[in-house]
Length: 196
Image (cartoon, rainbow, N blue to C red; front, side):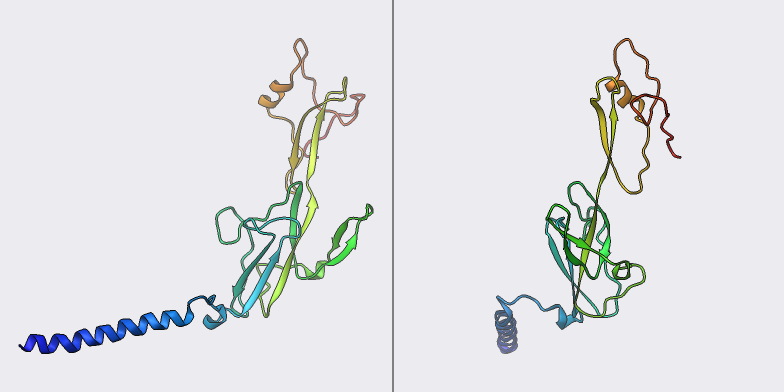
């Protein structure tokens, strides 16, 4: 008998708690979470300006005031390295000026004073960071007899122009001929100064 008397109030308390949790959850259903409720009140917008960050042109992330922010990098974290075909990322800037290039296409101008330094700068309020892109360099290895591009490769700002690997040279070799080296000019008078 005592067990039944103790079970009834216990069951009633459990039902009240379950109903409270259920109804409390219903009150926020359909509403997105507000990062400001947890102290993340600075919205940082990463605008890839023609590129993508995590497959989006614009990526928004919340940070606490006076905190460092993530630099989009790598290939597996919350903000991966942005990409844009034919371009290299030259940095992130807090401002840009809309201009028109010589062909009448939209372009952007940046000031070095607006470059964001992820190691020293801290977010203080909502802001937008703009990706600055520069055209990717390309090296073409040309047959001087035919002017045909035998091999080409993209280079980044940190890559130096390098001779082809022996495997790549073998792919473009000509039967009965010996490879003599790399030259800056079609007349084969000035050797190319790799690393110089």
